[in-house]
Length: 328
Image (cartoon, rainbow, N blue to C red):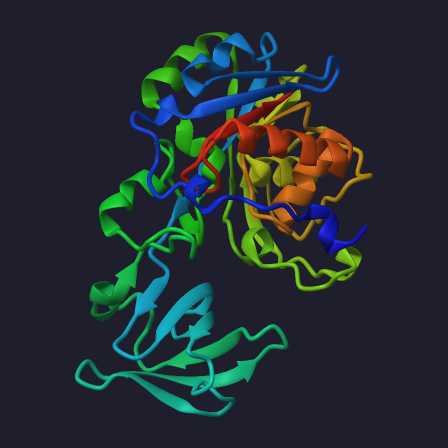
């Protein structure tokens, strides 16, 4: 398969800049793989379509303000190696050459020495002050994706209502549609298991190779509690909320158990899902690993293209603040 198999053209006005209000008033496209039936509805009616007693699996990772914007540069921290050393994407990258010591803010005494430059452009930086120092607070921004205008008034909207452990560099967006009231109602009939996958480059890094099998996934850290494992072991049917939940589930062996590890699983068409029976997901960027996972779950890139054409024709809103799809 080629990268071009996962391309599509999207009108700019369908890129959502703000979330639906209330959250659960996002639209919902429902696709049944057995009957090939498409239904158009709203997320607040999700319970009408969920299989009876399916266990919902949520990723409860919380987005941290990992984008640091200074007067002449931006440092997007992708990993904290130790309190004084981070891995980061840099803009502009040209002055952050290997061995360079770059002043970030002279008045605040902030600088960074570049100790390594990876092939993909990631820099390892030795900071003059530890990253948890409050001096950085005024530079911190929510790491909205580049297609969303930076607006800190939307920071709370870029978190799920159940977000808890801090660590993600992007939101697990399929979960953004849930309200506390909706989750409370669903929990009466559907077991809910929360696991954690801290979203990083493994989820949102661009695929730059035409041969998708040559793409290298970055590892992302996950946690499964003993309680979550117990709920999952009792499940007869599992609905993953989001591609990050699905990737975590597919990285686990049965019986499920309390675990802490990392995953670089790369799911593409032809993959046979072992732990995910249904999937709730948003509409993803062209040529992204997320779209490849959805194509795999649907069974083919052709089916993905058909559903995305339907969504575009029906003017669904796309990407992080956009609408949702339930694949049965």
